[in-house]
Length: 194
Image (cartoon, rainbow, N blue to C red; front, side):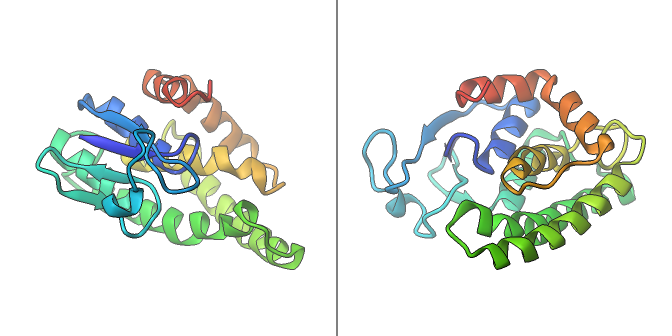
């Protein structure tokens, strides 16, 4: 498999999950000009033009973080509980982070007016409060078992530094604990972020 990524972007969640799941992968970075590091047109690979994109061994391309994370869990048999409500809680958390949090980061990654950034900060503060409550005293977001939702949450928290919002102590502890996981440390190193 090939993971098309940009260092430190949301594709980091997929990168960490691939490592944790023990799957073989190749990384190919994408430039802001939509070129691959080997000078191909990324739009010919993913016409949507954004990362992540995962090229399967048969040449099929998957896009969207939620889908790629679920695919990694499905083919590895890891990182997604299958036996009870925890599976659905994991998918619920992925959807929430994708729609309510990730989408709210747009003003901080582009040149938006301060009024838009302030509206986004209000929405993010509420979302972070909900995630902090869901985390509670657990080691991981859904249960005491690491899931694909944890890798997405790690990236969400890493990217939060652009917003100017302060994370709760619980989310800060969680972020620090996740950063020490071998799969997270390796992905950060491979992307030149450590």
